[in-house]
Image (cartoon, rainbow, N blue to C red; front, side, top):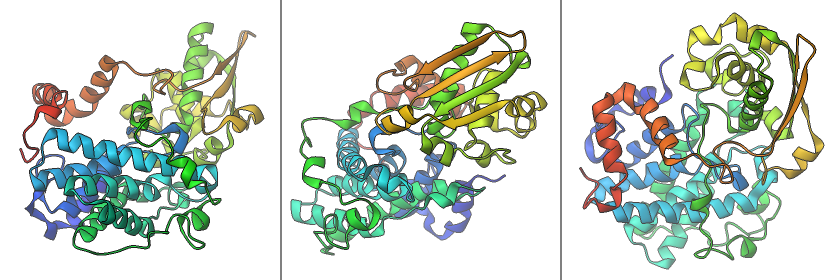
Length: 400
């Protein structure tokens, strides 16, 4: 299957090979095209970051927007990082305020991501407070992204992140030239909060802005799939190690978790990689059968693996009321395994490996980066780029 970002390159060919921004592998692009395509690429294989309290992936839309504009404007590495922080801090607060009510129908990365992208772009453009506010106001009315888009096999989900990046850049560039938005668009009677949520308390949402930095509490994915299944995967692997039981010797697996995990990771018998990434049963079975759920788990041979498919039929899932009540502040799962020899075990996974309270180390993050970038760039180039990324704040310009 051709990746969505590659198809977007074809679709927007007239906006490529010109402009001052760059696609991931160096091809020149206009700012809006780079934001759209890079943002979509960043969300395509489900390895981007998460703000747990907001059920939101801030990195793909915010960083794609900031990178495109920073390259086009010749901004420094430090200016780029400042813009990313601004985008994260604004958008994560909106995401947390909108909460579960918003997530019932909307895909937060597509909706809330517009604010992250607009905030980052407005910061890089140096907009004054009034024009900055108008950029956010216009971004609010661009916000879109329906959950139904990824409840069946579809390429729309990663496009939500790319479209949010493009929308945010568009809103900021327009505001910079004087385009105005409705400044009460968040709290108004027909505004974002009421139309797409449950009338959140905006004053409370922004009370800690500038003092408590949400960007320090990101979740970094340790598995290449839907983040809602991570606790189940981590719990299943921990219990498998504790019981010292191999996949063929497992008689039954029971997983209790929160409602959203079962609603989103709902595919009982996935036939494609996109469906498999949103299948709790497939990802848990694949982890138990093969030891991990990285990119290889979604290759055709692995999708058709008989051992994985057989184990899936022995997995039962259900809502755990206590764990559901704790969502989204806590993403937990309760896993029980019954072995064919009669042994039984149970494990409560209170958080996901990679969450702020169980973080990945710098070395683990580097290993993940090299696993993803190495096959594309080559080992030597990937390591050289890694060194530059660790020192990006020293770069005089990102136009390089």
